[in-house]
Image (cartoon, rainbow over all chains, first blue to last red; front, side, top):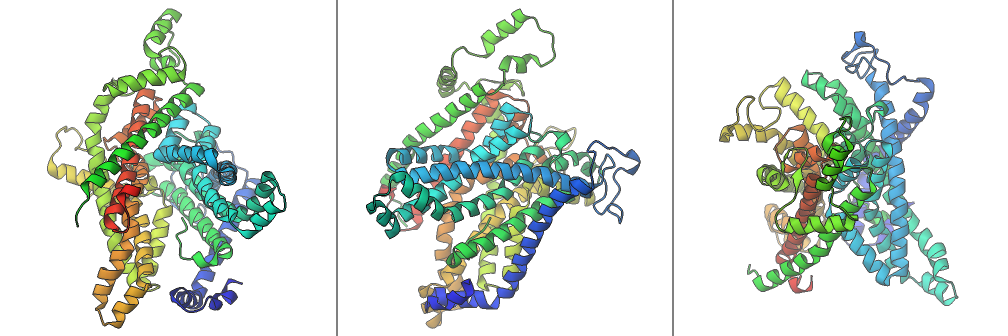
Length: 300
Length: 328
């Protein structure tokens, strides 16, 4: 759909560039899009189905098979307890993704609610909220997460809370800006002059219009939340060791790494990188749908 | 370029005034979180399992945790902090101000080297990538940028240790001095700085590369560039004089806002390399639930972020003649 409407943008640099980039490199973009979506689907299937078919006793230790390098039997090798790293990485991804999803959901809902309110109510509420946003951006998110987790350790919930409570700011900003630009649109004026209440305008006209942007921000926040969770877990402040996440696994592999065994460190990290890239690629596709003109903007 | 000093001074003054409430709310928030948490400084001090009599506990409580609500605790912390007394670190067993004084130099050195490195390298790679949009170099640099952006810095740091310290054995794996020695020599410092600085640079690099590339690419599609090319201006002048100059402007103004990411990267990189800076001390404070140290370092990082934002505004105002510093 985007490609058919594109040439009508007419002359000028934007149109010329649009045709060039949209035309010549369409193949690359399609490959990238398909690969991203396939990887996201594969990751989702793996974390949902693998535990059903390959139940894993996470404590099962087989010291006769410890630190085997990658082979046909163990594609990712085994860790210092003799556990298969591929299976453990999938389980780790499951924990990381779960934490990331819940945290991103929490952050997005807070951001959506506050951003909508600030944009729709305006006035003192808007000003107070913007000061709160300033305060939250004054402390690096990871440090704020470290602080919260240090005080409420240990457990999964402090991690979810620390990521969720520190990341609503960007969503709130996006939603607020979007609501502000929507407020002057004719359909909002029409609704108001038609006698719609503030609540109705916000709920029926503003909220549905900002949902695509907010949803996009929420999707992009999942890999970000996974990143934060693994950083906290790596620092030894995150997920308890018996519910290994990808960050916990990398932290636990430091001893093996010092002995020269690279695979327990490499593969869990690759899981983080590939998942992040796949989600970002799929989200980029979605953004082209919502807003085809702004394709060139950065995704991560 | 003449610098409008009075306007700069007024902007700095206004931002300093605006920073006061932000810092106050940040520190108050820390005390509120600590008050809401199950954290108990007395228990932390004597240890979980030690059999200490109730009287000793009460005496310690008298000394360690000031009475009153968290607002009163915050106020007494704030007043003594303004007097230079930040309390006693429980994990490192020395005054917090001494911890900061001993370590901040190493952190600043590491961050400064990494920051300058990523700005210079990022600009160079970004311009090279923008020169031929969609060319092989552009594709390589862009994909590498996205991949490195997605890679956690601690993971890159561990892989770098494995490769350079364990396999090739050319650089030390961490710390500041050789094992068994306490003196810091220039050569030793350089070799110990190399890996952490390189990893921190690489963790900050993608953002600079991708933004410079984007800025220069966009600038090369503008009319002035088309005009310059039509006049027969050399491609080198077009790229560096027109593309880079106007494309770098948005990047330059965002440089100051990268301080939070730099601190985030330093937290992870310093920890992996046992670099004796304040970021690794923050992680130690968090691991040991050392509230006085953690609170002071969090406040310090908020201060650094606010200073970075001010720097961003100043650069923006000085680099772009259309911006009036008095209106910021």
